[in-house]
Every structure is written in structure tokens, then in C-alpha cells.
Picture 1 (cartoon, rainbow, N blue to C red):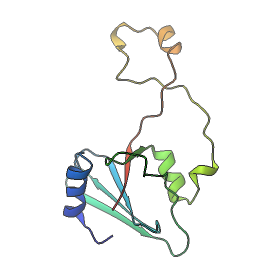
Picture 2: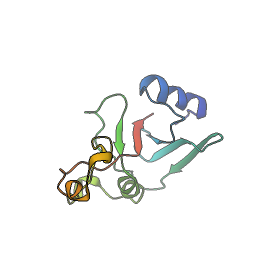
Picture 3: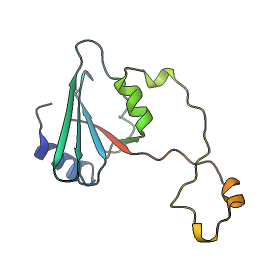
Picture 4: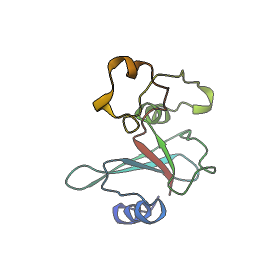
Length: 130
């Protein structure tokens, strides 16, 4: 957890092949998972949020089976992690969601949208290990 803005931006660019100026939150945890850093571009500069737990650990999904780009999670999942909830102990109910990139909205009526297939939630955050 010794890396700062420039080093973590370099990790995001080189190892994750992502743009640190994209507006995403990039979350890094230490090996013990008792500290996290969140790095993001806030419009006019890089910002960092750091949290060190006095007791316990953050329960992240297993990152060993994912690419070097990490794992994308949504805002609700990030909130669960920050609140100390083990993601393995919860079960999400499926929700209907339309993938905006897969639908040409110029020719779609509301009836056609309602009969679409279920898609996963949009992901807004990237978690990695520093």
C-alpha cells in the first residue's frame, strides 16, 4: 500500500490496460485485505480515498480467476464490501436490465423493450490488488 497517484495510475494503464482518467473508481487492496485505496479522476485531478480497518477485513470476490484488468463491480456491491458484508453469504435476485449497447433504440417500441432478455447489471467499478 505504498503506491500513490502516479504509481497506481501506471498500474491502471499498464497492468490493467485501462484509462485512469475514465471516471471509474479503481479499488486496490493489500494482501491481508484490511486496507483499501480507491483512486479516481474527479474532473480536474486524481483523488484517493484510503481506509485502514482497526479489526477485520474487507471481503472481496476471489480475484485469482480474473484477468489482470481485475473485476468490475457495481455501486451496491462496493457498498456491501465497505460495510463488511461477505459477498459469499448473500444471494442476489435477478433483475430485468436492458443492455444499452445491444439495443438500437431508434426502432424499438416500449413493447419490444419489455420483452427483452435479462442482462447483468452495469458495472462501474474496477477492483484490483496492489
